[in-house]
Length: 147
Length: 114
Image (cartoon, rainbow over all chains, first blue to last red):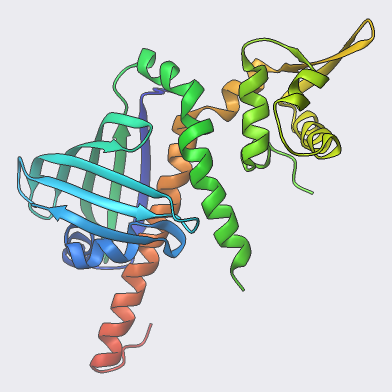
């Protein structure tokens, strides 16, 4: 297993055009980027190769988790590659999204490539403790408040 | 009660305890002195960390030492797995949103049988 690459595959019951639009347009992104209904604002989205994007997710405890990057490759309705930094702990990853038709569904293959093994192990110590750990606090608290 | 790594790190005090003993074992008094909360509260956190397998307590003479189980720690801090956790949740959210906008579209127009 390549520890550097995280890959997730999902099939969505929606036409590819709609999936693409929901994935790439700011008014849509603001609605789903934050898991569990966490608020997200899209502060920057220049959807073209070389264009910047920046989304800020706010955890229920008020802490903010900005993510930003630059689109490096866009093939309309098929493929998006982007660099990405997820503050405060994850920098220099490459995220790739591939969109394919699967009967009347749309298959999304999403992957995150982390720079190097060394980088990963360097991140290990601080990663969970400082960044995502705090993030999960927010998530868990939020989940426990749901009816 | 759930006892796993996520529960272990879900609390900021427990994360601090792990950080404290990550580099070298410390005796329980030293650990407790780092916090302003009560000794019993610290003991409770340490108990949970032991149950989650993240630290172990060793008796050395009259002192009890708190040691991080680094192999477990590696599992906790397998940040790619945490990243997966987040992205799974985000894709769930994306899927829900897709369903939502499609239903909305249907409501606006003619109802479609699903």
